[in-house]
Picture 1 (tube, one colour):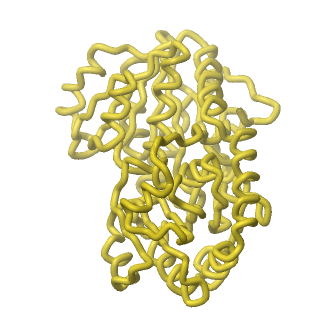
Picture 2 (cartoon, one colour):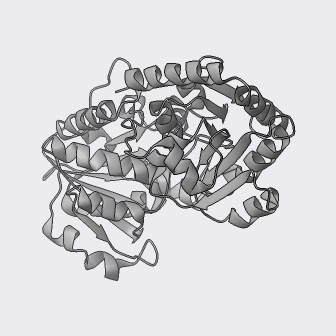
Length: 383
Protein backbone atom coordinates (compact mmCIF):
# COMPACT_ATOMS: atom_id res chain seq x y z
CA UNK A 1 0.00 0.00 0.00
CA UNK A 2 1.38 3.41 -0.99
CA UNK A 3 0.11 6.45 0.91
CA UNK A 4 1.01 10.10 0.50
CA UNK A 5 0.27 12.52 3.33
CA UNK A 6 -0.26 16.21 2.57
CA UNK A 7 0.01 18.62 5.50
CA UNK A 8 0.29 22.43 5.68
CA UNK A 9 3.53 22.29 7.68
CA UNK A 10 5.59 20.22 10.07
CA UNK A 11 5.97 22.90 12.69
CA UNK A 12 5.35 22.61 16.41
CA UNK A 13 1.84 21.40 17.17
CA UNK A 14 -0.24 18.41 18.17
CA UNK A 15 -1.26 17.40 14.64
CA UNK A 16 2.35 17.56 13.49
CA UNK A 17 3.41 15.53 16.51
CA UNK A 18 0.77 12.94 15.57
CA UNK A 19 2.25 12.68 12.06
CA UNK A 20 5.72 12.12 13.52
CA UNK A 21 4.39 9.07 15.37
CA UNK A 22 1.97 7.80 12.74
CA UNK A 23 4.12 7.70 9.60
CA UNK A 24 7.08 5.75 11.03
CA UNK A 25 4.53 3.36 12.56
CA UNK A 26 2.83 2.83 9.20
CA UNK A 27 6.16 2.17 7.51
CA UNK A 28 6.99 -0.39 10.20
CA UNK A 29 3.80 -2.22 9.14
CA UNK A 30 4.85 -2.31 5.49
CA UNK A 31 2.93 0.76 4.32
CA UNK A 32 4.99 2.99 2.01
CA UNK A 33 4.02 6.23 3.74
CA UNK A 34 5.54 9.53 2.60
CA UNK A 35 4.71 13.14 3.41
CA UNK A 36 4.72 16.55 1.75
CA UNK A 37 4.59 19.77 3.78
CA UNK A 38 2.92 22.25 1.45
CA UNK A 39 3.85 25.49 3.20
CA UNK A 40 6.86 25.03 5.43
CA UNK A 41 8.96 22.54 7.29
CA UNK A 42 9.63 22.62 11.00
CA UNK A 43 11.05 20.53 13.83
CA UNK A 44 9.17 17.38 12.87
CA UNK A 45 10.52 17.30 9.31
CA UNK A 46 13.97 16.21 10.43
CA UNK A 47 12.71 13.83 13.09
CA UNK A 48 10.66 11.99 10.46
CA UNK A 49 13.59 11.88 8.06
CA UNK A 50 15.67 10.41 10.87
CA UNK A 51 12.96 7.74 11.26
CA UNK A 52 13.23 6.83 7.58
CA UNK A 53 10.16 8.69 6.28
CA UNK A 54 10.58 10.42 2.89
CA UNK A 55 9.75 14.09 3.50
CA UNK A 56 9.46 16.99 1.04
CA UNK A 57 8.82 20.65 1.86
CA UNK A 58 7.39 22.69 -1.03
CA UNK A 59 7.31 26.23 0.44
CA UNK A 60 4.11 26.99 -1.50
CA UNK A 61 3.22 30.68 -1.27
CA UNK A 62 -0.52 30.04 -1.51
CA UNK A 63 -2.93 27.19 -2.20
CA UNK A 64 -2.88 27.82 -5.96
CA UNK A 65 0.91 27.97 -6.26
CA UNK A 66 0.95 25.48 -9.13
CA UNK A 67 4.56 26.26 -10.06
CA UNK A 68 5.99 24.95 -6.82
CA UNK A 69 3.45 22.16 -6.68
CA UNK A 70 4.44 20.98 -10.16
CA UNK A 71 8.10 20.91 -9.15
CA UNK A 72 7.44 18.42 -6.36
CA UNK A 73 9.77 15.44 -6.67
CA UNK A 74 7.41 13.20 -4.72
CA UNK A 75 4.36 14.13 -6.79
CA UNK A 76 6.21 13.40 -10.02
CA UNK A 77 7.82 10.12 -8.97
CA UNK A 78 5.45 8.60 -6.41
CA UNK A 79 2.03 7.27 -7.44
CA UNK A 80 0.03 6.69 -4.24
CA UNK A 81 -2.96 4.45 -3.75
CA UNK A 82 -4.35 6.95 -1.27
CA UNK A 83 -3.81 10.51 -0.11
CA UNK A 84 -4.31 11.50 3.51
CA UNK A 85 -4.69 15.26 3.85
CA UNK A 86 -4.80 17.62 6.83
CA UNK A 87 -5.74 21.27 7.13
CA UNK A 88 -7.61 23.48 4.69
CA UNK A 89 -4.71 23.77 2.25
CA UNK A 90 -4.22 20.01 2.41
CA UNK A 91 -7.90 19.49 1.63
CA UNK A 92 -7.84 21.76 -1.44
CA UNK A 93 -4.50 20.61 -2.85
CA UNK A 94 -5.22 16.99 -1.97
CA UNK A 95 -8.48 17.12 -3.91
CA UNK A 96 -6.59 18.14 -7.06
CA UNK A 97 -3.77 15.65 -6.55
CA UNK A 98 -6.18 12.78 -5.87
CA UNK A 99 -8.00 13.47 -9.14
CA UNK A 100 -4.71 13.69 -11.03
CA UNK A 101 -3.32 10.47 -9.56
CA UNK A 102 -6.73 8.72 -9.43
CA UNK A 103 -6.09 7.97 -5.79
CA UNK A 104 -8.48 7.66 -2.89
CA UNK A 105 -8.70 10.81 -0.77
CA UNK A 106 -8.94 10.61 3.03
CA UNK A 107 -9.18 13.78 5.11
CA UNK A 108 -7.86 13.69 8.69
CA UNK A 109 -9.55 16.36 10.81
CA UNK A 110 -7.48 17.75 13.68
CA UNK A 111 -9.43 20.95 14.25
CA UNK A 112 -10.68 21.44 17.79
CA UNK A 113 -14.44 21.04 18.07
CA UNK A 114 -16.02 24.47 17.79
CA UNK A 115 -13.39 26.01 15.50
CA UNK A 116 -15.26 26.71 12.29
CA UNK A 117 -14.14 27.56 8.76
CA UNK A 118 -14.59 30.95 7.15
CA UNK A 119 -17.58 31.22 4.79
CA UNK A 120 -15.35 30.77 1.73
CA UNK A 121 -13.56 27.77 3.19
CA UNK A 122 -16.83 26.25 4.39
CA UNK A 123 -18.32 26.55 0.90
CA UNK A 124 -15.25 24.97 -0.69
CA UNK A 125 -15.20 22.15 1.86
CA UNK A 126 -18.82 21.27 1.15
CA UNK A 127 -18.11 21.10 -2.60
CA UNK A 128 -15.05 18.89 -2.12
CA UNK A 129 -16.84 16.67 0.41
CA UNK A 130 -18.60 14.72 -2.31
CA UNK A 131 -15.26 13.50 -3.63
CA UNK A 132 -13.62 12.42 -0.36
CA UNK A 133 -13.51 8.69 0.32
CA UNK A 134 -13.35 8.88 4.11
CA UNK A 135 -13.02 11.42 6.90
CA UNK A 136 -11.02 10.50 9.99
CA UNK A 137 -11.73 12.45 13.15
CA UNK A 138 -10.10 12.08 16.53
CA UNK A 139 -13.25 12.63 18.58
CA UNK A 140 -17.03 12.19 18.22
CA UNK A 141 -17.52 15.97 18.54
CA UNK A 142 -15.57 16.49 15.32
CA UNK A 143 -17.52 13.74 13.58
CA UNK A 144 -20.76 15.56 14.35
CA UNK A 145 -19.56 18.66 12.51
CA UNK A 146 -19.03 16.66 9.31
CA UNK A 147 -22.41 14.99 9.61
CA UNK A 148 -23.97 18.46 9.81
CA UNK A 149 -22.26 19.26 6.50
CA UNK A 150 -24.13 16.35 4.96
CA UNK A 151 -21.29 13.84 4.80
CA UNK A 152 -22.48 10.19 4.97
CA UNK A 153 -22.21 8.89 8.56
CA UNK A 154 -20.89 5.50 7.45
CA UNK A 155 -17.81 7.23 6.05
CA UNK A 156 -16.91 9.28 9.12
CA UNK A 157 -14.61 7.22 11.35
CA UNK A 158 -13.15 8.12 14.73
CA UNK A 159 -9.50 7.11 15.19
CA UNK A 160 -8.29 8.63 18.47
CA UNK A 161 -4.79 10.01 18.72
CA UNK A 162 -2.20 7.87 20.43
CA UNK A 163 1.28 8.30 21.89
CA UNK A 164 4.02 6.14 23.29
CA UNK A 165 5.19 6.43 26.87
CA UNK A 166 7.87 9.16 26.95
CA UNK A 167 11.44 8.00 27.47
CA UNK A 168 14.41 9.94 28.78
CA UNK A 169 17.69 8.98 30.41
CA UNK A 170 17.97 12.23 32.35
CA UNK A 171 16.92 12.39 35.98
CA UNK A 172 14.19 14.66 37.30
CA UNK A 173 16.77 16.52 39.41
CA UNK A 174 19.08 17.10 36.47
CA UNK A 175 16.34 18.53 34.30
CA UNK A 176 15.12 20.81 37.07
CA UNK A 177 18.64 22.13 37.64
CA UNK A 178 18.87 23.00 33.94
CA UNK A 179 15.56 24.88 34.17
CA UNK A 180 16.51 26.65 37.40
CA UNK A 181 13.58 25.11 39.28
CA UNK A 182 13.96 24.04 42.94
CA UNK A 183 13.76 20.33 43.69
CA UNK A 184 10.92 20.93 46.16
CA UNK A 185 8.79 22.87 43.66
CA UNK A 186 5.51 21.56 42.29
CA UNK A 187 5.71 22.07 38.53
CA UNK A 188 2.58 22.68 36.45
CA UNK A 189 3.53 22.22 32.79
CA UNK A 190 1.60 23.60 29.82
CA UNK A 191 2.69 22.30 26.40
CA UNK A 192 0.99 24.17 23.56
CA UNK A 193 1.52 26.45 20.60
CA UNK A 194 0.94 29.98 21.89
CA UNK A 195 -2.24 30.76 19.96
CA UNK A 196 -5.22 32.67 21.39
CA UNK A 197 -7.44 29.59 21.84
CA UNK A 198 -4.79 27.92 24.03
CA UNK A 199 -5.27 30.62 26.73
CA UNK A 200 -1.65 30.52 27.95
CA UNK A 201 -1.95 33.97 29.62
CA UNK A 202 -4.88 32.63 31.63
CA UNK A 203 -2.74 29.69 32.74
CA UNK A 204 -0.13 32.18 33.96
CA UNK A 205 -2.72 34.19 35.88
CA UNK A 206 -4.10 31.00 37.47
CA UNK A 207 -0.61 29.92 38.58
CA UNK A 208 0.16 33.34 40.06
CA UNK A 209 -3.14 33.30 41.96
CA UNK A 210 -2.50 29.77 43.24
CA UNK A 211 0.99 30.74 44.40
CA UNK A 212 -0.57 33.09 46.94
CA UNK A 213 -1.47 30.03 49.02
CA UNK A 214 0.90 27.50 47.42
CA UNK A 215 4.21 29.33 46.84
CA UNK A 216 5.90 26.06 45.93
CA UNK A 217 3.94 26.00 42.64
CA UNK A 218 5.85 26.85 39.45
CA UNK A 219 4.25 27.34 36.04
CA UNK A 220 6.27 26.19 33.03
CA UNK A 221 5.23 26.80 29.42
CA UNK A 222 6.75 24.91 26.49
CA UNK A 223 5.68 26.44 23.20
CA UNK A 224 5.87 29.56 21.09
CA UNK A 225 3.61 31.61 18.88
CA UNK A 226 1.70 34.83 18.47
CA UNK A 227 0.66 35.01 22.13
CA UNK A 228 4.22 35.04 23.48
CA UNK A 229 4.15 38.77 24.30
CA UNK A 230 0.79 38.41 26.08
CA UNK A 231 2.18 35.52 28.13
CA UNK A 232 5.25 37.54 29.09
CA UNK A 233 3.06 40.47 30.09
CA UNK A 234 0.88 38.23 32.27
CA UNK A 235 3.96 36.74 33.94
CA UNK A 236 5.37 40.15 34.76
CA UNK A 237 8.85 38.78 35.37
CA UNK A 238 7.77 36.65 38.35
CA UNK A 239 10.30 33.94 39.16
CA UNK A 240 7.58 31.30 39.51
CA UNK A 241 6.87 31.33 35.77
CA UNK A 242 9.18 29.81 33.15
CA UNK A 243 8.53 30.53 29.47
CA UNK A 244 10.74 28.08 27.59
CA UNK A 245 9.73 28.71 23.97
CA UNK A 246 9.56 25.82 21.53
CA UNK A 247 11.13 22.63 22.87
CA UNK A 248 12.05 19.40 21.14
CA UNK A 249 12.51 17.61 24.47
CA UNK A 250 8.95 17.39 25.80
CA UNK A 251 9.57 13.90 27.30
CA UNK A 252 12.31 15.42 29.48
CA UNK A 253 10.02 18.24 30.58
CA UNK A 254 7.31 15.75 31.51
CA UNK A 255 9.86 13.93 33.67
CA UNK A 256 10.46 17.17 35.58
CA UNK A 257 6.77 18.05 35.95
CA UNK A 258 4.13 17.21 38.56
CA UNK A 259 0.95 18.27 36.73
CA UNK A 260 0.08 18.62 33.03
CA UNK A 261 -2.20 21.60 32.30
CA UNK A 262 -4.21 22.76 29.29
CA UNK A 263 -6.44 25.86 29.48
CA UNK A 264 -7.81 25.88 25.92
CA UNK A 265 -11.12 27.16 24.61
CA UNK A 266 -11.16 24.52 21.85
CA UNK A 267 -9.53 21.11 21.54
CA UNK A 268 -9.99 17.78 19.81
CA UNK A 269 -7.85 15.05 21.44
CA UNK A 270 -4.75 16.94 22.59
CA UNK A 271 -1.45 15.14 22.18
CA UNK A 272 -0.01 16.99 25.17
CA UNK A 273 -2.65 15.53 27.49
CA UNK A 274 -2.04 12.04 26.14
CA UNK A 275 1.69 12.43 26.66
CA UNK A 276 1.12 13.73 30.17
CA UNK A 277 -1.07 10.73 30.98
CA UNK A 278 1.49 8.36 29.45
CA UNK A 279 4.12 9.95 31.70
CA UNK A 280 1.99 9.32 34.79
CA UNK A 281 1.01 12.93 35.45
CA UNK A 282 -2.37 14.13 36.71
CA UNK A 283 -4.09 16.50 34.29
CA UNK A 284 -5.81 19.81 34.94
CA UNK A 285 -7.68 20.92 31.82
CA UNK A 286 -10.73 22.68 30.49
CA UNK A 287 -13.78 20.56 29.76
CA UNK A 288 -13.89 21.14 26.00
CA UNK A 289 -13.88 18.97 22.87
CA UNK A 290 -12.63 15.45 23.47
CA UNK A 291 -10.90 16.24 26.78
CA UNK A 292 -13.71 14.88 29.01
CA UNK A 293 -13.28 11.53 27.25
CA UNK A 294 -9.56 11.56 28.07
CA UNK A 295 -9.54 12.84 31.64
CA UNK A 296 -11.74 11.14 34.21
CA UNK A 297 -12.62 14.03 36.51
CA UNK A 298 -11.59 13.29 40.08
CA UNK A 299 -9.86 10.06 39.04
CA UNK A 300 -7.06 10.95 36.63
CA UNK A 301 -7.29 14.72 36.86
CA UNK A 302 -9.50 17.76 37.34
CA UNK A 303 -11.66 19.46 34.72
CA UNK A 304 -12.73 23.10 34.82
CA UNK A 305 -14.90 25.30 32.63
CA UNK A 306 -13.07 27.22 29.88
CA UNK A 307 -12.30 30.79 30.83
CA UNK A 308 -12.77 30.18 34.57
CA UNK A 309 -9.46 31.38 35.99
CA UNK A 310 -10.64 30.96 39.58
CA UNK A 311 -11.52 27.29 39.02
CA UNK A 312 -8.22 26.66 37.25
CA UNK A 313 -6.34 28.29 40.09
CA UNK A 314 -8.29 26.29 42.70
CA UNK A 315 -7.51 23.01 40.91
CA UNK A 316 -3.80 23.85 40.84
CA UNK A 317 -3.85 24.84 44.49
CA UNK A 318 -5.55 21.57 45.43
CA UNK A 319 -3.03 19.39 43.63
CA UNK A 320 -0.03 21.44 44.75
CA UNK A 321 -0.79 20.54 48.35
CA UNK A 322 -1.71 16.87 47.80
CA UNK A 323 1.22 14.73 46.59
CA UNK A 324 -0.64 11.49 47.30
CA UNK A 325 -3.57 12.63 45.16
CA UNK A 326 -1.20 13.61 42.35
CA UNK A 327 0.41 10.18 42.47
CA UNK A 328 -2.91 8.32 42.45
CA UNK A 329 -4.31 10.42 39.60
CA UNK A 330 -1.12 9.97 37.61
CA UNK A 331 -1.34 6.20 37.94
CA UNK A 332 -4.97 6.24 36.84
CA UNK A 333 -4.10 8.38 33.82
CA UNK A 334 -1.30 6.03 32.78
CA UNK A 335 -3.71 3.07 32.95
CA UNK A 336 -6.22 4.93 30.80
CA UNK A 337 -3.54 5.76 28.26
CA UNK A 338 -2.43 2.14 27.96
CA UNK A 339 -6.00 0.94 27.56
CA UNK A 340 -7.25 3.50 25.02
CA UNK A 341 -4.63 5.85 23.55
CA UNK A 342 -1.52 3.84 22.89
CA UNK A 343 0.33 4.74 19.65
CA UNK A 344 -0.03 1.23 18.26
CA UNK A 345 -3.82 1.41 18.55
CA UNK A 346 -3.84 4.65 16.55
CA UNK A 347 -1.56 3.22 13.85
CA UNK A 348 -3.69 0.08 13.56
CA UNK A 349 -6.77 2.26 13.17
CA UNK A 350 -5.26 4.13 10.23
CA UNK A 351 -4.24 0.88 8.56
CA UNK A 352 -7.80 -0.43 8.79
CA UNK A 353 -9.30 2.79 7.43
CA UNK A 354 -6.93 2.80 4.46
CA UNK A 355 -7.67 -0.84 3.75
CA UNK A 356 -11.40 -0.08 3.85
CA UNK A 357 -11.10 2.82 1.44
CA UNK A 358 -8.92 0.92 -1.02
CA UNK A 359 -11.28 -2.07 -0.89
CA UNK A 360 -13.93 0.17 -2.45
CA UNK A 361 -12.77 -0.40 -6.02
CA UNK A 362 -10.04 0.05 -8.59
CA UNK A 363 -8.81 3.58 -7.92
CA UNK A 364 -6.91 3.75 -11.19
CA UNK A 365 -10.23 3.71 -13.06
CA UNK A 366 -13.05 4.71 -10.75
CA UNK A 367 -14.70 8.12 -10.80
CA UNK A 368 -14.19 10.25 -7.74
CA UNK A 369 -17.73 10.48 -6.45
CA UNK A 370 -19.08 9.81 -3.00
CA UNK A 371 -21.09 6.80 -4.17
CA UNK A 372 -18.06 5.11 -5.74
CA UNK A 373 -16.20 4.55 -2.49
CA UNK A 374 -18.19 1.54 -1.44
CA UNK A 375 -17.03 1.61 2.18
CA UNK A 376 -19.26 -0.44 4.40
CA UNK A 377 -20.34 1.12 7.69
CA UNK A 378 -18.82 -0.16 10.92
CA UNK A 379 -20.92 -1.07 13.90
CA UNK A 380 -19.31 1.40 16.25
CA UNK A 381 -18.15 3.93 13.61
CA UNK A 382 -14.96 4.09 15.63
CA UNK A 383 -11.67 2.33 15.02
